[in-house]
Length: 113
Length: 111
Image (cartoon, rainbow over all chains, first blue to last red; front, side, top):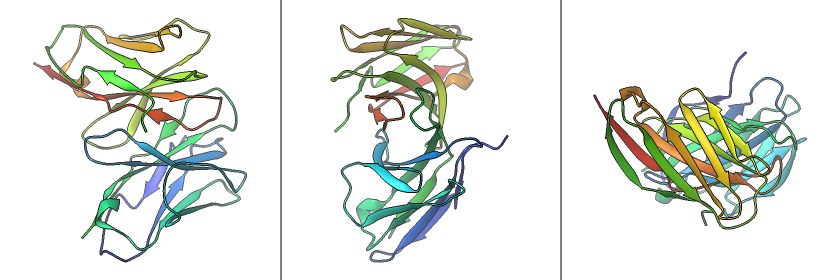
């Protein structure tokens, strides 16, 4: 049973560019959440997708957008990259409104230069 | 803003000793989850404790929850060098809701 998979594992982009990160949830899970983790800090919630709709959103600008596909996989898009967007981006999958665990992928390390 | 705050921020112990870390949060919760993170990679789920539970065990891990004090603790017994990692608590206000993380406790277990 595959867990949460994210791609790519590392990425280097230039300021102003756009980036797309991908996530496949754990088998049987239908909800995907994205988090940003700056070095030395705890993860910060970006948004959550359920049934292909953005259900919740954290305090992130509109440059951050996402999508969920019918197979529950998800993408995170960041436009007009800033140096401050350099971070580890984590995807978590869970099961709807169930009071159960969220499982995380290994993350994508984004460096903006 | 972060809901949870872990204490201490860093902990250094000898192999075989117990490690205890605490998490405090500000608002009512549905559940609280503890995660481990090695070397800035993905988060590994350790234990979920629901708001109506007071204590849970998993192997060498013991988690307590005191909703009246809005606090939780994670105890790792008989620590091993492989337990060296950062440990985070995360709270959910409702089932399936977003997780709000604290800043983490960095644990170093010396052989």
